Length: 458
Image 1 (tube, one colour):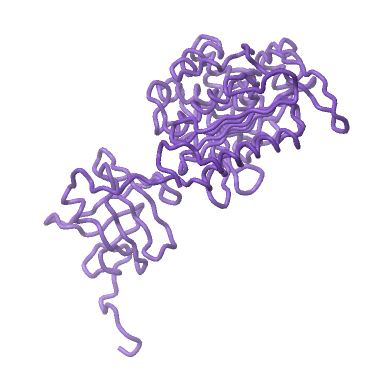
Image 2 (spheres, helix red, strand yellow; image 1 turned 90 degrees about the vertical axis):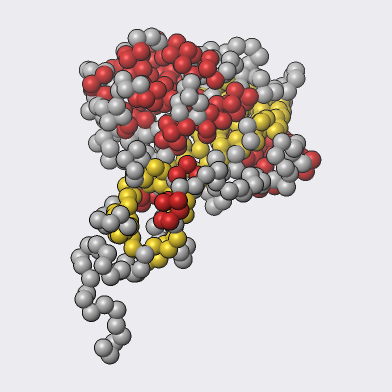
């Protein structure tokens, strides 16, 4: 292991170089660039090319396809945080007459609005956006493929609607809103609507021969919020850092955490989709990010919050090289070879004695739990045996706590006191936690057998 801020070990760097070189060769990509960030600092970057001229570097632009959707989602969450829209609002409230107005903003962000995956022909990714000048041209005569809210179904037109929603509420173009509200504050100066040199040309590689043909780089018009952007490995690393920690100039830590929370289960096991972010659970970690592709380009961006590692892979080939898989493998190489070293344990700077008195053993019926005090007046309730429901809780203004995890996410924990001020029990969503199993004298729902605990014979 290395200590924080040390360079990657030579063996780790060698493994990264080998993976990129192998991916470029086996994937038959004209060029490939990749980069890894650890603890907020670029730890490694490298590029390979089979073309004439220098290899690409972390400042070379590639088209990033559907990673654009994550940028659009940030713009929509900003509208919500400003109180201009609600995630449960139907689209019709802000963008009437689309034919898909019954879907909510939340459903559109998480691809559960039931809209079709693609626009009507011709293929929108390889034709100019001028062929689809109106939303009706994007949605077609039958926008709904499934009932809204019933299932996850990835929809590119859904993000066109979100981009149009941004324009309708802001009164400026999606491109202008993105530049002003996200790209400039975060310093993403190499993320642009169109290519700005140095950038990679898009190519298609023949499946059965080592020959290539140029791919068109179309202006997607109304479909731009679903896949238009060009960016660099360096910019995407910085963007992922924001998606992990937040930035109050753009979105708070709480709002980007909301983006990372699965909103719908994807069609393949073990993964899900948040609000503009894919969520992939592997055997060892949870990855957040997005894959992207447009004719001539493939892209992958993943970050692990627990490991504090980000990886990006960008290539200029229509198919053949699985950029998202390569990015995930690069992240895994670093996280597994050089695990994150935790910060030193240290005592809390101050402690509330009343909260401290709440810690220790509690029982829900005959189930035993421990309650721990954490920083910022937070609490953590966990089953003593390691199996069962548990959660971390953050304080509420009214004196209770709100659950953050799994079954208890959003549920309220509160202390119930007797008339003399002593603690009777903890109430968690109507569950009574007492100091002893079914404690005598405590206000346990259903009451207690007056005979108390006894053996079979008495």
